[in-house]
Image 1 (cartoon, one colour):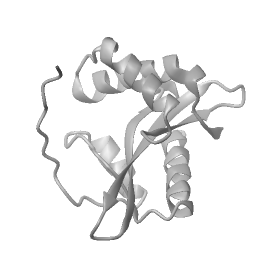
Image 2 (spheres, rainbow, N blue to C red; image 1 turned 60 degrees about the vertical axis):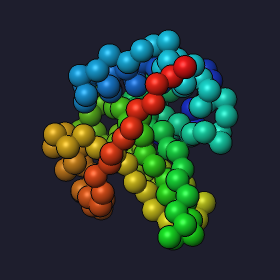
Image 3 (cartoon, rainbow, N blue to C red; image 1 turned 90 degrees about the vertical axis):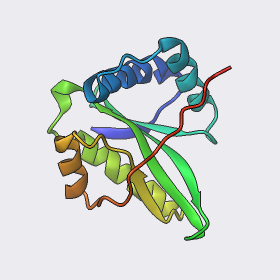
Length: 150
């Protein structure tokens, strides 16, 4: 297994992985009319996000992780926000997420980030346990205000 940067050629895989992740973790069907251009836009503009794919020896995608950035004036530095995590069902419990996570943390260190954060569904005990094993701790609850698109 290796980790590589995703490209526009990976858009269909990332779109499908995101749809599966939302279905599995939040029991939501994502609107593909929003999801597809959202993924393609992020892949085309590195200022918005960065995707990494874990791939097997043949190059087949096993999992993904996306990061975005948040400026912290309190710490005078950026946080890497892990998002859009997905590992194919048949590849789970084989170190795929650990490899993606370690790659992300390495990139965060290299770029001088002050930390790595992520959102986790509070009922996703398996994910919470995985993140804790990797040294992450709960710090904040998240609140959101959805704005109408117009």
